[in-house]
Length: 468
Image 1 (cartoon, rainbow, N blue to C red):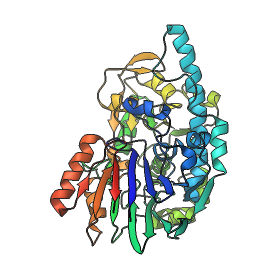
Image 2: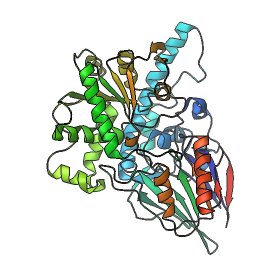
Image 3: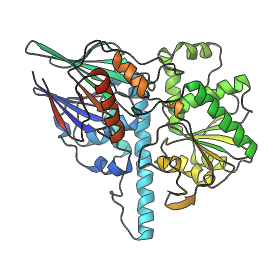
């Protein structure tokens, strides 16, 4: 038996997740993600390393754009196979890919105007990476699957999806390959969630696999418990209320926005914060929240209890769902403190940039980060202490209070990753550490080697491995 595994993304980087598996005449991808770090963004524009029409299928771990964001480009360039993911993932992916296409169209238009005004050219083409029609063309290829139910994707090859506890519909995928009387399993961790988080169930544990790919986003650090993070959120809100500014929360539309709503709802029930206007200024987050309501079977016990008591975090007094650009602009004319939750989570696009323009130079306001900020993103510059940042082509001094709360992360931290790996009762033939900044992945790989004695690799971009 011979299986070739090629790392086409998330190799010593946090975004662009994409792994190619080839065995015999069958080849498939696990994830097809967009690069979001500035230093790697040019890869989005390159032709795929393999002809898309030669691929048999794609398996999606979840709908975040760094895992699904290049699917429309893949389809436009010739892919015609099935795209497998659990139902919640395929539903959310449709929302996110359409939004991505619209943002790219708007960004391309804005860049063309700016570059014409400045009489220069940018490093990337001034056209969308893909269009709305390209995104829609990919939806007909989506094939929903169920957790725990093995599906045949090729002769002697089956895939089973398991709950990863990261975001709604997120999956770990175990691929079993049988050839010439031999049997091999490859376990793709996807993004591993944290145990004890609200709304979703805990990540699935496994007892064995021949080869394991594990993410390492927070492989070199520990995250604070959720209850501490909630305390920090309440404190940040109350402090900003006293100063008279706004609380601006750059938030991922999938999961993080819903978790923040969960906490705000709980604070209001407990009387921990004053009643404020809360704006979800993201049509995508609004649409994704609707998908949450459609899939209560994926909730944990605590969330189910709240829903039964009619205390839904998706419908409380003071919550406004902002859909139009006009409504979004009107928020900035409101006097007094409001809470604004807008995308994107790393400030790389979307309406959050306009709210930053209004608030980032106001000492009374707070820019509150509740998620990971990749190197090369505007969010990383702000949390890194930049005194001045460029937003929408202009520079603004950073005078607002900047707060980062890591406890809300949907990613497992170092010890939680080790705990997940420790459930394996048998040593894998090889462990591949992916989806982390280079230094973080190397650190985590060394830690696992020291603790287990396993053979551990930190793949480079486009590096190939033969799995026997």
